Image (tube, rainbow, N blue to C red; front, side, top):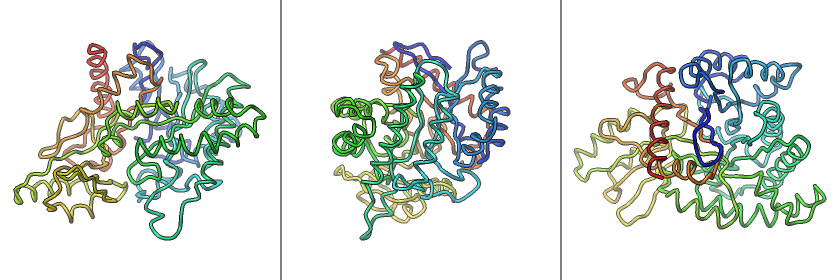
Length: 409
């Protein structure tokens, strides 16, 4: 849905909320949830969605008339898709995902070919005018390379450049601007703002620029401009809050190197200030244990009194160290509901979101806001409610936050 702002701004929700790896299941999720949400939240105007498509769904959409029929369905229902979530390649619900969400990584043909399929799909489904984005993994998973094996960053860069080349050709031939939105995540090969900026400044432009210049037969400055246009940052407010990063600092560094934000994903992480009393800390640990589950990674960033940050791969193992006296705060990569201010002894990082919203409203730093709470199935039982009502509540909180941000601009 369109949000009043200084520049065109869409608010969507990501359909990674809904289970389903095949296109038929994705379509059923749209009928069950997106259609009634549109009727309730945007009855008179088009309603945006961020499609989550697995590789299976993407391949099925490119068979026969499926893609044309999908476009007809969206148009008939007043829906539009300017965003695709291309981070999870395979199963994302009702399976053990954990670190396999990063597989296959960007060194592989599988990841490249999957993303190119998504480019074809988005070019057909996105509205006329504006821009569209495909979010993707932060190249790979850092903990896969703790031994002698090193990531093949040269292959990863070449594959990203290949996708940018295709996106540039799509814009040249159709006028449709599509960008690849790299999404830093704790323990990703690009896990935070500084690592994205380093990739952009030290690899993408100086090394990828000549590759793209040769492929397209254009001068190096033009190739680098195209990379800046088609490779962007996905700013997930949950992920950056887990890393204790401030939006204003990340934005400043992006501007320094000429990088853009493709989308802001509006989401919140678990946050807890650890009490010094051992009994109270034990109680906090028991409350956190309710969030341990077997589907997703829930990385923990532990802040010490001296400012040092210690990273834990997942919440379950991290709980073994909760009594470390040097630890004063934990932030947990668990996407919790935006509309809930806290969870008993635990809080959320939602107070970090308004600064990014204000910049989107006032300065036009991105065309896309995407609500991305996807953990409804794995929340502790007392936090679960009907899914349709949950998504609507996320919209209500986000729209109220946008209104407050606009008033404060």
